[in-house]
Length: 271
Image (cartoon, rainbow, N blue to C red):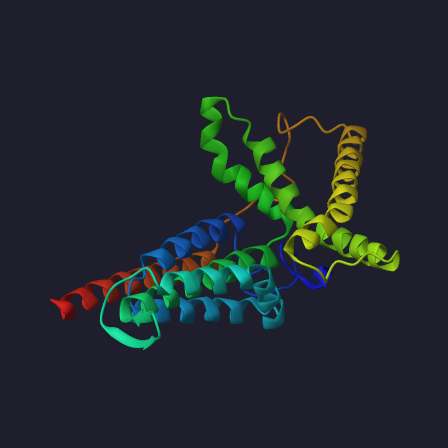
């Protein structure tokens, strides 16, 4: 069921990762994402995976919640990894009829699948341990230099946080609409691909209407509370970088350097 997907949800806690400054978490997540794409050998890939699982353990959020998000991209992971098997050259591993699997194709397939999985795990680590309010505040602080170019950073951060916050709400709404349509006798699981696509229309239309209704209610509630953007607003919670944030920065920098060292080591071995 779609409601069981943990995408975009926040799990309150008091773990080391929960207590990190949200600005530091966002920056470190970006660095980890870059590190994932820098890895070009199996040692670097394993270093990334090990670091991510260590951070997940420190977050003290059930591992089931992370792998629930895998349902969202499972088809994409399988599809792209299978495609990449056939788009690289190298020594032949085995051949089944006209289909030849090379070492380069196999490596590409593994790297694409692992990178997609790590992207979901890293982004989930951020949203699971950071509340939407803290995310909004941190994004606004990080984007603050853009205000020099007359960009309203507070509104931009607010829109991003609201969009992230409503992902689980829309998934629950979709789940309810599907159950309601099935109760009315709608058949969404049989027939060819065209019939299944047509069966989505009774789901998408009420979902779109519900989304506009929720957006209108949210806008009305913000107006009733005299919300007028970020001008003249003070901060209830002042963000400070502490010793735990410094340790987290050193840990991520160490992972980054290890991945770079692995890349250079693999290059030296091949030379």
